[in-house]
Amino acid sequence: MKAEALRGSSLNAAAIDGAVLAQTLMVPDDHHRPLLVKGRILSRDDWPVVADARIDELHVVRMEPGDIHEDEAARRLASLVTGPGVVQHGPVESQVRLSAEINGIFKVDIQRLEALNAIADISIFTLFDGQLVSKGKTVAGVKVTPFVVPESRLRDVERVCAGVDGVVQVLAFRPMRVAILVRERLEPAQREKFQASIEMKVAWFGSTISEICYVADSVDAVREAITGLLRDADLVLTAGANATDPLDPTLVALEHLGAQMEKQGAPAHPGSAVWLAYLDERPIFGVAACGMFSKATVLDLILPRLFTGARVTAGDFNSLGHGGLLSKDMAFRFPPYGAFDTLDA
Image 1 (tube, one colour):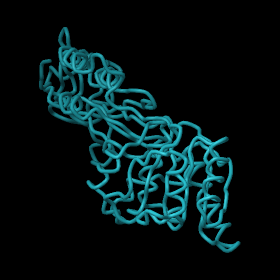
Image 2 (cartoon, rainbow, N blue to C red):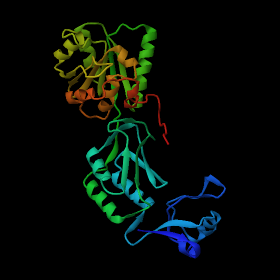
Image 3 (cartoon, rainbow, N blue to C red):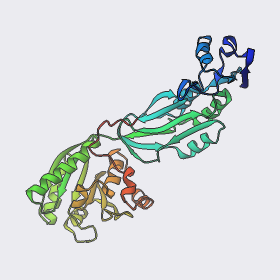
Image 4 (cartoon, rainbow, N blue to C red):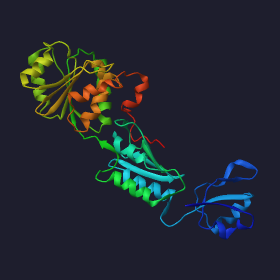
């Protein structure tokens, strides 16, 4: 790459041909209206526009063997870092935008991301790892800093990205059949609101509710209900159990059935009084009934992980403490329930 200032007799149609414009040319009497934008590869056909800018000196960059223009470099860089569930747009003004192809959990290989940004001229910026994203949500931007970069920069990127299926990806949710077990004494109007709320949540993950079962506060009733629900469900959500009472009917019923309790309680607020058990490798997740109504509790942090099909562990619950003060400032951590295929330009 070679920088050059064209002025006087050297500023002509032949001199600009093939050069990369290093400055934005504005309308002479209106500095808010661009004539040509920096980064453009000029041709002889651009000369009338350059002349109309009425400038005395034009700054350009000459590409040399082994150099790559910023747009092509951004496209190649984006292809190297893009993983499953992510699509590319652009480049626009030398930047390729990456967006979510699906509703899912955004994942970024932070160690590789930092290694890539340590390479001269490379810039990759993303959302936080683990964020929930809707289809169309912008998850990352990819660009190179100068107008022209040596191809060796891209070879360095290739080495960092070798052996991985993308540095950024969106984990897809698996369609599941979800059964609901409720021990709360809800009035008809409350039941209707409760069902609408949980149906909205489950639908956002691309899943369906197989059955909603209201049962009495007895061990036998709960045990029979769970056995029946698991015949046609991949996941059971329960409401109304007292997570801190060892003799609670739901907890006792699970013990009788041979369920494995994975975790009781979570280092987060609101919604800390939750629990997760597994029976025949299927998760049974317990929350207070009010947690089904709310859109911003521990339930809404754990559900996305369950819907990816991954086994959620006690360690996953323990990690919730970092960022577990679930105030309105943490809204970005929760699924945008009800917002389907929302585009974020």
